[in-house]
View 1: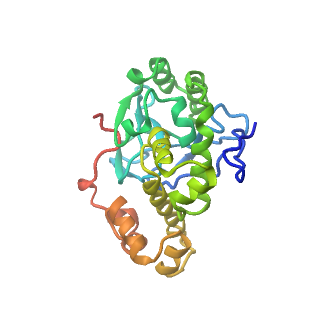
View 2: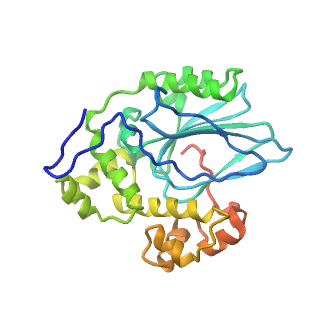
View 3: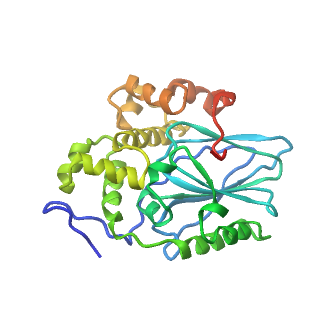
Length: 293
């Protein structure tokens, strides 16, 4: 089914999955375990990514969590004793610490799907964490499934099915889907006023829509998309483009604009990150991602 929100713009069908896949940091001590989300998957149009990592070394590891505009469900711990958290969107870098033998399984939800799993507006969850057992009606069942002795891919599928059962329909999500897709397509380099003209809604109303579905303002979401796009390029070891070119290609006005974004969200400069990777960060100054409020 298609929708028209103005006489000029045709919205994407809810059946199409967004192309946006958030950037994540690979750690050689716990390479990510990919989880396929193909057509027919219970959360095919609801999630942007599902992945898992396991700490396979004899010491604790710290993983950075990058702002990406997504609300996430996170399951972590030893496989027989997993915990489950619902994590709101973040507006600065956070960290996850894993101990030897612990597994981390994360489901990142598209903004257009958040109203189907939340009890309130996404803005009430920004930088906030809830226990899934307490937040969701079948939370106990979901977390219990995460503790089952199953291969990671099978465990992810079982969790996806249980989560989908509890998701309520939200027919108005097409607007946020259109806006977030346009921001992604433009690498964050689009004004809210342009989205207003394209959709036929006021900037104020679009701000309320982002408050409901994303948890951050349209302007911050644009900055996050620029950050995400630049990180994909910066992490490519075959990309030798000067930082000014990388900044312009990622939707920034110039290198200084990109550095302000990096310092705001990641607490470091783009040059330092390119040279040293995420090991350059002082994790003692970064807040835990999974800490309950």
